[in-house]
Image 1 (cartoon, rainbow, N blue to C red):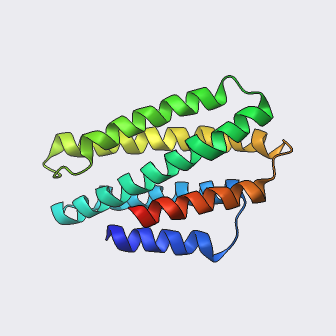
Image 2: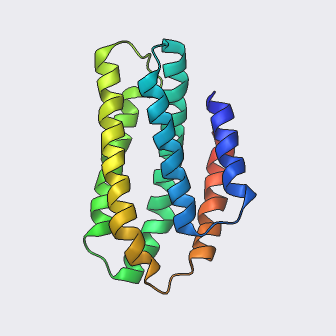
Length: 161
């Protein structure tokens, strides 16, 4: 499943050239759908597969934002609040990933970690989409060029996964 999800996500993003914000929004939607599937399933095997896909998507997404998108937005906005806060949120998500990645979905504590991760990611996405993205669009950043950089890095990371 993780391979199928990775391939589908990769094809989806490479099928059409996207600006940076469109690419990041597509990532947000994809991981949200994975979390929704996790909540609906009772199968430990399916949960394991979904967690693998969620962790992969989040690791790749946070890395491309941390390395490419956030520095560009921080510089363009001369931001001292939005980007640092988003970076701290990424660190928390990475900590949660470490707690579940490679582990068996063995009950209520595991499910609770996924639930908290899901809620945390939803909060983070809401802030990005409602605050950071609109401000970033108002800058002179070339969102198409930035999107191409993000996509190239994303595809590189997915190929290594």
